[in-house]
Image (tube, rainbow, N blue to C red; front, side, top):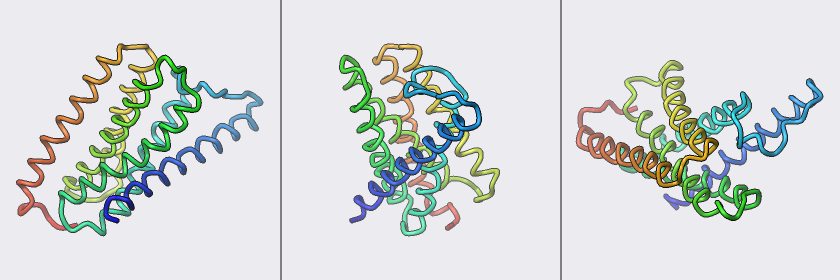
Length: 192
């Protein structure tokens, strides 16, 4: 149950972000009379950046909710990673429904990795934050937003998937290094 609950919360975060996307796109249509179209994620628009921000904010909120139940930093990081997996499962389902089949598997794999990586980064940064102020939350979300945005820009500009995977591998490697340091510093971190 320890791994299923974060996956379900990740799915809920993804569905919540999707609902927010629909509400925003419908509001945009109502007030401007223009449709965004289904391909908003395939080009650089303000809406794309808003969607990335919504996704990272949803992950942040769900991680905060689940972290209260986790006694150790290792369990918290594991929770964040499984939450990212749940988020990625929902997004991968929609990629599968709307993606060009020639890029389907690389797109699915990279979508799973980017959501696990950004959720892991959010989880790590929440644990290592000195306080839980609004400024701290903004910084954490901004870092995840930046990482996710770079990934999306690489996809939009048709970078090779080898380069995209290299970028994601660097994030995961840094996350693993930070996780080991965090566990080693555990006695010195204040309980939150």
